[in-house]
Length: 330
Ligand SMILES: Cc1cc2nc3c(=O)[nH]c(=O)nc-3n(C[C@H](O)[C@H](O)[C@H](O)COP(=O)(O)O)c2cc1C
Image (cartoon, rainbow, N blue to C red; front, side, top):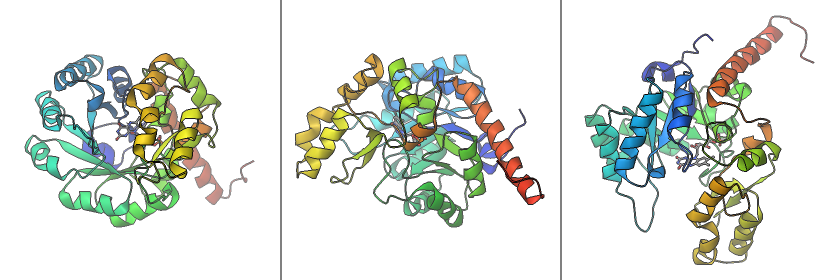
């Protein structure tokens, strides 16, 4: 497989600009290592580990599985009892990791520390204004997550078809794109729209190495692009999750004027975790993106990276032939 070189691959010393984004409960050693080993960038999710010491051990485990670069995601969300972010940060740099994906809020409080330790920050955000701010703060790259994505798409509702070229116009540093991208057509489209690569969540959630029950992966394969729900719109903390009895109930309660305490028992993290551990897709809310409508198999993550890159090349060559007077595609 020839390398697909972009500014992003050169920045990080990887072979292909395909990133497996941080995923709570999912971003563990086997998955991240499989993506990195295939030449993409695998990412561990810091807060999936109960303590900073556990994160250090997970980083060590990943190193045993691959010698290639991988990153760690640090998601900084407002919570009542915040995790010890500075201790997680310290575990990351003490373990020698030099690529960090920040998400959730501004990377500013963490910039000086990571800079001092030679970490290249990829900041993930959902709006051009936050991307421009991150560039101004000095991050190495931006990851721009469109409305189609799993998890938190923000409140602007701008899909990738506009968000990606808008980011290309606004940024000078390398950036990758995500939200609804799950195959080579998505990678080809992102490159054509001006991105330096792609980030994928839902696609890698549905991979062999993702540490979740097979029933959840089968549900993703069976589901269509219609099978997600946006919850917490009224709270301005929108999340895209699987359509099931729990997310329908949350939407109903909030639309009827309910407040967070009314839905809190339904959205408890423990219930979502049960979905992934027990395979009961109705046990709680769980993040998944629109791209599930385009996902038709469960495959090893490394094979996915290779397939995505090969398919992107074929897609772009196929379109180029149209300009060369080739026959119209059937
Ligand atoms: C199950 C799941 C959990 C996720 N958890 C996180 C997280 O903890 N932090 C984060 O920054 N992004 C998280 N994401 C978002 C992904 O990293 C990625 O940005 C997103 O899935 C891209 O959109 P896509 O699903 O259309 O590929 C999660 C996504 C999924 C599917």
